[in-house]
Amino acid sequence: MRELSPDDHKPFTAELPTKPRFSLAYDVISSSDTLVKHPAGSTRIVEYTQSDPRQIAVSESLSQKGLILGKVISANDDAALAFSVPKSARPIAYDASVISPGIFSYNDERLFYDLGNLLGELYIATDEKLVDCGDIGRTIAFVEFTDQNERRLYFVPGIEKVCETLDIGVSPLGYYAEKLTEGFGQRFDNAGLQFRLGFAEATATENQ
Image (cartoon, rainbow, N blue to C red):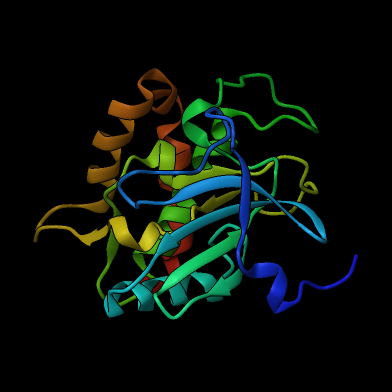
């Protein structure tokens, strides 16, 4: 497959919005998720506008760690960013609970462990000790068809627009426990320990 040229990136001609179950578009971020055509073939594009210097610094920190889904394929002068993302990626909000572990399954214990680890990485990404204040079911993406040891959970492009610091005295684990119980109910209650373990692993070096 040949590399994309600058001409391939302008303009992107949207063919179809990504199907709702897979769509990473999120109105709070004002992002879009479409399948587009260019000479190299069909590509899935998530696009949003980034302008706040503080948010840009957060995005860069997470990107350096490989925690944001996809690759930037264009950045325009008006601060619009376009990411090429895997066609299999979907928000975790629509994942059914998987309780039978196996070589190819991704059960809830593993899901919430990895989620805790990812959100722990966000917490230590900058000196601000940020948390995800968006709908976590929409701000975290799951990618199918990875190798067994590859990452499966990523932040969606634009995650920096919904990150904030907690009020003094509020524990990040307490904050997430309330938020995830509201969003995932019994699924989180059953795997909450795994979430805490994943978060603790990510933040361990910060606490030493």
